[in-house]
Image (cartoon, rainbow, N blue to C red; front, top):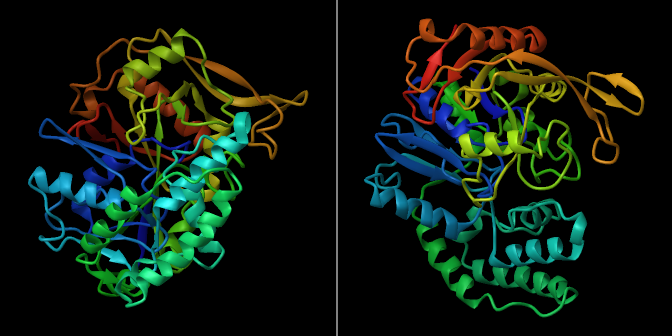
Length: 424
């Protein structure tokens, strides 16, 4: 009766969607437990690319049920767009009865997005780097105890509840200046609400635990990455939810004792989107090479990602927080052609050498201490057998396992679901 958790160990964009898709045949239920449509999980197979923002990445598997959990915040407009795009490509999870949604999940209103944009503009140079999807303001209303939830859409006074919250938002927005017209977005919102109401609503806590009680296998799918966790990430440059394995408990309604394997995903290098500290960032030709070869542009926003070498102190921190039991390394193919690659093994910080993530890393620069590692020239994208892995890549994996003290079980050498190798 355990639920496995799959999540990112860096600043997001580690390739979680692809790995969920690969592992999905082993599970009966895939459940998103936090975040919102600021997440973009990219999946590629049969020469087709799909980007999911809200829907779990198990949606393409014939046998698994998919749950949008109570810890997720949902933009009905974006959810409708996702479902419409899937339907155009021959997938209709609603008609196929493969998707359910938690009644307790909160809704993103058009005015949440206006608040997000107004707040970022007002912060100027100190802005967080928000995707402007309204995620933060929605979570603020959730913790402020006046948000709207999916289950509210079935109530006769839903429109009154909506107007009450919008009036609160109007009052706040008036302090920022003129309030933009959002009537078109509002009309689209209520149109999308009708589609949302056609998706079966469940109490996720009972739904998930019933699966466990019946001995079925459940995988919790995380969004963003550990270093963006609201409590333990590089605050204040973080997201608005708990991206760690503990977030699966509150985001789905499962007890901590029921957490089984925790699968941590990381890139062979490191990237970050938005503002905030990034000790190993490469603001040079090497960073640009990583960006171009790795196609490091946001799946949701298209924003170029900041690129750098792998950061082991940050990863050890993430492994500790999540209780990671096995690792997945993605985008190893992007490092092909580098004569030498580097890994940050510690920081020079306030005159000391430390190997942990400091509290005020956003205020005081942590200078990375890098260790050089021989690179490999071979193209990895055609590899389908472990025996074909170049010796220097195997040495890099061994180096990482020694420092991280957790085995690398899966290796991804390209975006397609077929480009995934099981190492152990």
